Image (cartoon, rainbow, N blue to C red; front, top):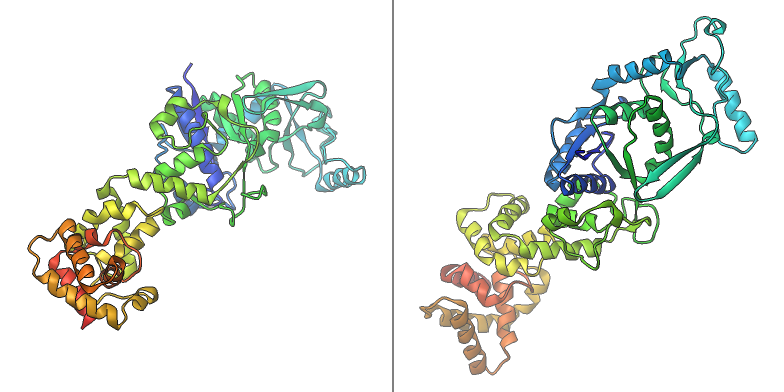
Length: 466
């Protein structure tokens, strides 16, 4: 049997972080078992579904590297097929037309509320003759669900979940206008797409019993269910925007790498021993449902940032240059020329060692692309007092006479100058950093000087010292 998984988001908003994890788990499970990972856009809610949301979902999945098999399935386009199944059940006596008026349903709702129980349709049209139907009332079509016994969901994460059938009423399949409801559409699409495993958030667990009854009424195979606990914030509360319930595109904008976010989402609710850093290839080899936990996981930005820093350090320098240059150009309001780009590439090893996000990396690399005179921040300006400027002027003269412009001889020259001036190395190196980078922090300053080159270094010193 070929395992077929699906990710089925509703395009009523962005691809949020919980949805991204669901997609990841389905993708990994399918690849682990050499199966198929399908994408279905559940756009039956026409009032709330938007093209912008669809584009955001597709873009988010592509950025995360979660490629799907085959064409995207759009649920709304299959409404005719969904309705056909409802009419088949009607013809087989497994469904019926219900002519309840809104007033009757309101009465049932009020009675349930007064009795302190959930609203449950009372089945009054289940066995009535259609000749009793009131004139001019368009009926809905309801499923004849079992009224006795139990429905058991054999869930790979939650274990066996037992639902008493008396708790479930006869759900609507087709509305009065003939349009199918979500529950029907999901079951039909899963069957027609050959879905063998339904891996989704445990907020869908209550839907599973109803969907199973519909599946069984059609004599279709029941897929394997795996309902994953939701993601909570660090405080254990339901995930909100302040915790990190943002669209995937927000994480891209905040400077996270897709491989880092994949790794982090993988560890939210799934474990493999004490492993924290798990490359995607290893995740595919290891991933299975038996290691998915039953408890909600907690989102932690600090852990994500640390993990992202690891992946930044491992990333190829040319790739990082391609990722940070557009950010630098946006900050500068102009293109980064070839010379500045080359400096950023040469300095990337020192830059990425200190950054945890692409935002931090772009900020720290920006001084390589700045035009003269360099903007000096407030903290750096405090280092450039009269004495410091005098020392830098002297250093400038020393540097002008150097033939070997590499980090080691540059450091040796500054150490000699410090000894001659009777000061500590930092009393020269810190003002030097401020003058060349405009800040109090940078990669090793002698590495910076080598990358800037002799002419640019001397020019930046001259701008500061006059």
